[in-house]
Length: 293
Image 1 (cartoon, one colour):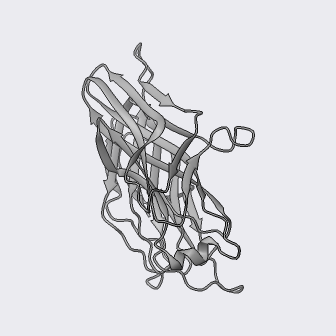
Image 2: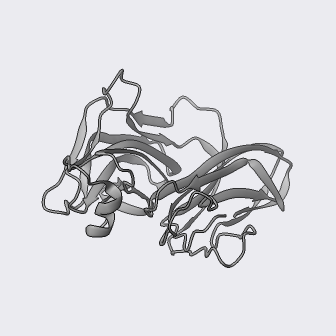
Image 3: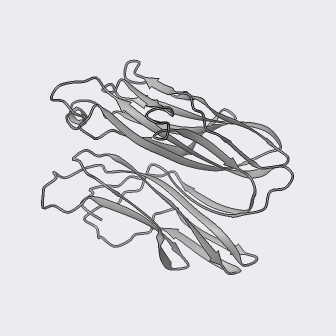
C-alpha cells in the first residue's frame, strides 16, 4: 500500500454461490434501458430520486434468496470556468458526489450503496458505480429499483447517456438471479480504517469472514465489492511512491491473485474507488473458510 492516511470502506460484501440449472420457471430478470437519465442541481442537494426507467418486477414461485447486481456509468458536468478545475473546487466547496442504492418493495438497503466523486481538472468526469444485494423474498410480486442522490453545489448535473458516441460508451443495468442452489454471504456496515503508518502487510477486513460446509465437490463463484475513500492525501511529487490500496480473497489460508483488485490515486484529491472482483474455484466437499483482506 502507498501513503493513504485512511481508507474508509463505505460498504463491503462477500458472496459465494453455487448455481443450479434453471427449471421451467426462469429465475433471472434484468433491465438495460437505453433512455437518458439525468440528475440536475436543485440548490446543492436533491434527495434520493429514482433513476429513470431503471426498475424490475419479479414474480417468485416460492420464498427464495435473490442476488441483485447493478451498474451505472455516470457523467458529472460543471460550468466552464477558465483556470478552475475540480481539484481547486474540492477545497473551496463541499465535496460533490453521487450516491446510488437499491430499493426493494419501497425499502432502501444500505449494503447496496456506493458513491463516486470527481477529481480531474476537466469540466467532465465519468465514473462507474456497481453494487450488490442478497435478500430473502417471499412468494409473489416484488419491485426492485435503482435510486441516486446528488450532493454538493459545484456540479450542474450527473447523467447516464446510453446513446452517447457510438452507443457503446455508457449504460446502466439491474440483473436479478434466484437460481442459486447454495448461497453464503456477509455484509459489513461499520466504517473500517486502514492507516498507512501501521504496516504494508495484508490485513483482514473485519466482518468479511465466511465459514461454510459443502456437501459435495462443487464449483463456486466468489464475489466481493467495497467502496474505498482516502481521507487524506499527501502532496504528490515526481519521486513519491504510488498511492495505492489493494484487496484479495484468501480461501482456506491461501491467497488468490486471480481475485485481487487495486485502486490508485492519480491526483491530490481524495477520490473514491471501488474494489471488487470475482473468482471461480473448484472446491472439495467439507468445511472451508474465506476471508477478504
